[in-house]
Structure formats: structure tokens, C-alpha cells
Length: 443
Image (cartoon, rainbow, N blue to C red):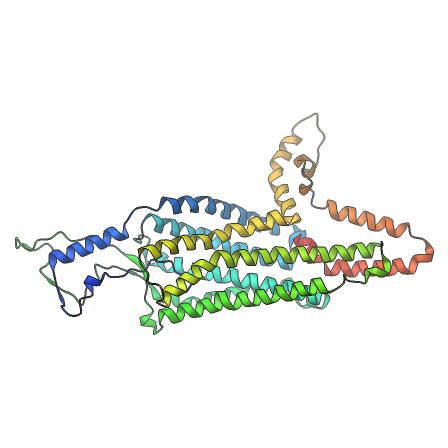
């Protein structure tokens, strides 16, 4: 199966049931085998895995919802980069709402009790959400590279409308890649799948020596690509290449060229000739902000690759038959899958802790309750949420206002003998503002 889609839940019929030489089994032996098989699937609850999932689900749900609210609530946060961030949060929420609870249920018992529809949706949407996250991170790396390489020309073409089209295209590709999963994943019952076996007797027979209690019927969510004419290991390898290897190569190349560009090029607008001017400060600030944005997005890509690498590699080895899937490998796959799911909680944490505007906006939302209480006190004047928080991060526009006042005072205090230089500084500042619009919104 696809390296990013299915966990180790395939039901494997014990070797004793695959009796090609002797197509007949004793009823007592058959009952013993099936009961042992049932007990193996309905084994002890994995409390450790459940304990790991619960806080991750809560954190991922809360943090990703906050990210989406911040971007759509505040106009200044609606940038091209942040639209990709919202798309990443939507994919993470999909994993959190559907895939993580099902994984917790599988930690309790691998027996599937949610019906065939949820069986198909669970594995299909997990693959789609992971693919959408990978493609979004790849698009973000390309966006940042082109914005740094040729910012003005790129921004004229790559606007918000085209970004939405790109995001829609990413989801269409992700949905298409994993479409075969909807047909291949089905509910299977080891007890009912005995067409090629003849039993020496029957359950519930009236004859004294043949009356045996029938083992309980149970179902597991499993895959079967044979009706589609697809080999499972070929499909798994293709998904690994399309969803992990190729995007990973693109991200590595984009950030490598991005780092080379940022380190090799001088700050824009040739600030050496007008040292100390507003343009010089804007130029250096622009380069610094671009580097910070690039480092943050690179961190997202690295975290994603590290979180999903163990599961992808181990799942691929199982699909290729290099590693035999048994009880130990199934347990290891469950923990590797948890590590991949945990990435859905790490992404919004990175946004909030490493970007100023996200911190300020989240703080403003969280501090509104305190602000409302403060306004009810008669002896205190009405103050802004930023002051009530007693934290500079609550003030969204402090930096931009100070920068504007400093730039205005620098221009107004200049002498007439340097008017041409300051005119050039003003034009360069306007150009810098155009280029760094997304960086300021993201940061």
C-alpha cells in the first residue's frame, strides 16, 4: 500500500488456513485457529499510544483553528504565503479530526467496527491530507524562491487569485493520486473467507462428536488491489516517489538556491551609497525578514520530512517484501504513524512561536477576555488590548508605526542640498515596501 496512506491493519490469514495440499481441516483444529486469530487481533489495549495521541489531538485541533481564524480575521495577515499556511492547517485539521481518532481506536482494538464507508474514508483521507501537506510545503518553497529571485515580476503574476487556483490544483492532484484506495480498501473477515477450505464437520451439528461453538465473526480494514489489476508494492512505490521523494527533492533544491541567493547578493537598492538613510535601513530589514521567512518555512519542511520519514521508509520496505509484516512490525508502524500525525500539531506551533504577527494576533484574540474585564472597572481608563496584555507582542502595529515615524522624520529633517538623494531613498523605500509586503504580513 501507499507509504503515506495505510497503517498496518491488513488481515493476514494464518498459514494453517492456507492448506493447498490437504483441502480439509478438522473442525476442532479450525475452531482453535480462528479463536486464536480473533484473540490476537483483539489483544491488549495500547495505553501508551493512546496517552501520546490525546494531547497531540487537543493541541493540533486548537492551534490549527487559531491559525485559520487569525488569517481570516485580520486583513493584514491575508498574504500569498499565509494562504498556503491556511491550506496546510486545513490538511492538518483533516488528519486531526478523522485520522487520529481512528488511530486511537485501532490502538484499543484492530477489529474495525465503524463500517465500510469509514474504512475507506479513513485511509483515503489520510493519504490525501498528507499529500496535500507535502504539495503545499513544496509550493511554499517555490513561492519563496521566486519571490527572492525576482520579487517584483513574480508578485505581478503570482497574486492571491492565482494562489487559490494553485491550492485547488494541489488538492485535485492529491485526490487523484489516492483514488484507487477507495476501491482497494474493504472490510474483510477471516472467518468468512474460507471458500477454498472444506471442514470435516460443521458448527452447531447435532452429532455429539461434531458440535463446536462457532468463533465470533469480526472484520478488519484491509486492502486488495487485485480486482483493480494493480500490484500493491508498485502502487506503494509510486506513491512514495510522487508524494515524498520528488517533492522532497524540489524543496531541497529550492531552499539551496534560495540560501545561495540570499548569501551571495548584496541588500537591494545598493544601500552602500546612501549609508544611514531610510532606504538603507529598509533594505537591510528586507533582507533580514526574507531570511527569517525562509528559515521558518525550511524548518516546516524539515520537520515534516523527519516526522514522516520512519513510517514512509518502513511501509515501503513492507510493501516491497523486504520486511515481513508481523506483530512487532505492526506495533512499530503504529508508533511511526503517530510521529507522522504529530507533525499536524507542530506546524501551527512553529507559526506562533517564530512569527511576530502570528504571536501578536493570537495574543490579541486570547487577551480580549481580560480587556473586557478591565473595561468594567470604573477607576481605570479604557485601554487597548495590547496594553492590557502587558506584552509587546499584543501590539500588532507598533513596529510599523515606529518605522513610519522614523522614516518621516528622516525625510522632513533633510537639507535641500541632499534632496536628490532623499528623493531616491523615498522611491527605493516604495519599491522595498512593494517587494516585502508578504514578508511583513507573514512575520
